[in-house]
Image 1 (cartoon, protein in one colour):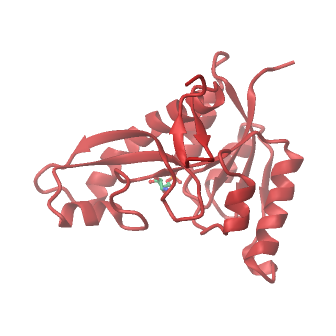
Image 2 (spheres, rainbow, N blue to C red; image 1 turned 135 degrees about the vertical axis):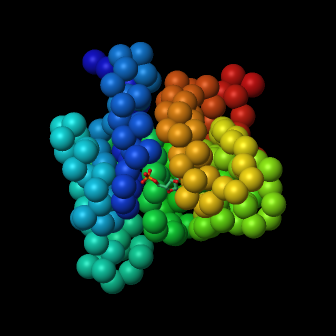
Length: 207
Ligand code: GRF
């Protein structure tokens, strides 16, 4: 009987962060196992990798559902079927309802390519360059009803170099994302951090 936490990953596209999590979870000492990968796009390239790894996958097209909530309820049913403890959003390009985020509060985390609370939403790299920032990075945070607003679990920083394009900067950040996300999930699955749902902030479990 494995004591590892059961984790599902939600993707919409490339899935490089998903791959980093799957690779980390291959380690016998890692406290989480990836038990399923879900995509809202059947053509998401990341699904192929997951299937090749023998990980169950599922897809649902939002267009087949009358409401956003119907779609999310079907997604929750899939996640419950996989008996997941935690959900990792990794390039999942759907805004989630308050109902869904409340159902998974403290259980769902996301990776965002900025040093939150800076640059919520899209085009983070271009915005950091346009602002003249000297550094940029990525954050793993708990998923709460507000977009990219949940408490931050961990961050990694990179310098912004003169002449950086958004693409060059994105690639530099992505290298850090692939290290940060497995580390943050590991902390969560090991019980080293938890969302304090009363105070809406992160606290050490034994504090
Ligand atoms: C990453 O930059 C992640 O931070 C953002 O979307 C991108 C997904 O890339 N949320 P990938 O699908 O993990 O390669």
